[in-house]
Amino acid sequence: QVQLVESGGGLVQAGGSLRLSCAASGRTFGNYAMVWFRQAPGKEREFVARIGWSGIITYSDSVKGRFTISRDNGKNTVYLQMNSLKPEDTAVYSCAAQSQPLTYDYWGQGTQVTVSS
Image (tube, rainbow, N blue to C red):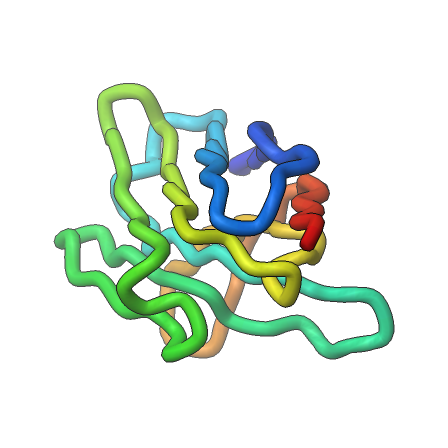
């Protein structure tokens, strides 16, 4: 069993930065790929970034060059550094643990990010 808790969301002006954290319980954190998603009001959930257990990273085109995903297996935490934020980045950001393709084993409760123009 893995529990995920996100933090670091808030209100920021366009062009600003935020750093999200997703802290995981459990001793098998390093065995999972960790994925960030976001969901804006009235829209479907959207993939943001993924970091594999081996460190391979992928980003959505909408955040590439502005967001950076990283993980610290010693602290059981994955991070999402978000720079040059835009109002369209406003959403609830959630992290998920993935043990195999197309399967998300555990989800966090989400943290709100609001970017004002």
